[in-house]
Length: 247
Image (cartoon, rainbow, N blue to C red):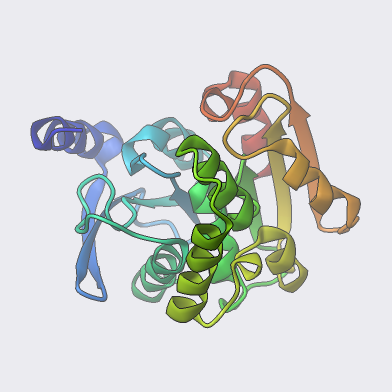
C-alpha cells in the first residue's frame, strides 16, 4: 500500500468513532496504533495478520465499543504505518507485550492469521486468567507448515536449503522451528478461546487446527466454517456475530 493510501486510511480510522492515535517503541521501531473509547477499563486488543493493517478490523472496533470495551489496535512491525521492512512472530509478540505494558491490562483479544501465532507466544509470558478471552480467526497454527508452503510456492525442493532455514531460525531464537506452534503454546494458556477456521483455508490449513482440536482442551471452542477461505472469514456477518456473542 502506498504512503498516501496509508495516510488516508489513518485519517479515516481516526475520524471514525473518534479513534485516538498512539505510538510506542519496540526495539528500534516505532509502532503506530489507535484507541477507541479510551475512558473504559475493559479492554479488547485487535491483532491483524500478515500483509494487513489495523484499519481492516475497524468493524470489530465499532461493535466492541458498543459493548463497552476500550479497543486498541496497532499496525504490527513492518506493517501499515509502523516502522520496519521485515518482522517475525517473536517481534510481533514483543509488540503485543509492549502495548499491554503501556496501555494496561487487556481482557480480550481478537487475532487473525499471523497475529494468532504472535499472540499465542505472547500469552505464554503475560499474566492472564481463565476469564481472559481470546478469539483466534484462521490463526497461523504451525510455523513449520508456513515454511513448507513457502518452499512449495518458490519451488524449492533442496533438503539442504530447508535444513539451513531451520538452522537460521534456531540460531536467531534459540528454539527449533517446531517450537513456534500454537498447538504447543496453548498448553500454557488458560484463557477462554474461541477458534474459528474455514475448511477452504489455503493459507493456514484446517488440518493443523484439527490437531489442536484433537487435544481436547476444555478451554477451547472450535467453530468450523465452509466457503470463506482465509480472508473472507473475518468479514463474514455470522462470524462477526459469533465473536461478539463470545465477547
